Length: 188
Image 1 (cartoon, rainbow, N blue to C red):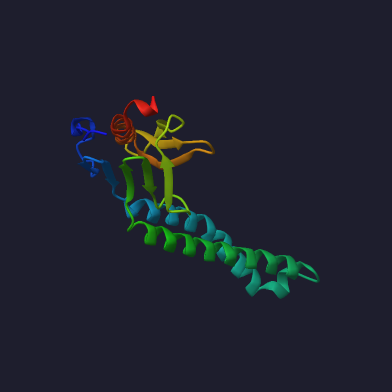
Image 2 (image 1 turned 135 degrees about the horizontal axis):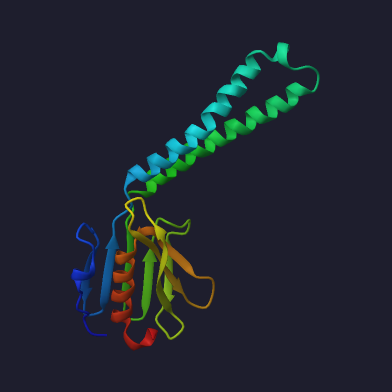
């Protein structure tokens, strides 16, 4: 495998993707998505849970006036469910913040593509370079900035691995093109 020549001109001007080439292959590092996206998601979920929680708390404070008999069991079950949702929200945000410190790394060496990504529960994925390996950019939709967003799909003898969802589609195309070019005719 020869050292690939990287064309950075195809990347968006504000892209923070870095690539390092060696005679053995290429390593592409994609920094994590901004933290504001996780904060915005948490705020949205909190705004949905807050009125329900306040209503249930007020209902529980005046339960003797509002409920009789078995009704209190139903109200307690809903309250416990709300507490579980709040705990799940806090735990999810905590895990998102922890994983925001890990960049996505695509390491292409002589006979193997290794992907380390915080997007999936399993951080490391290995693929052998052979004729069954497919690397494809997927157009997902339009982002907040009204630009096309995408995802990178890597497939080999099994279910596809979809990573970098929601990232700028031009970055995804550049990554797919760079990896495909570095692999050479084996992936075509």
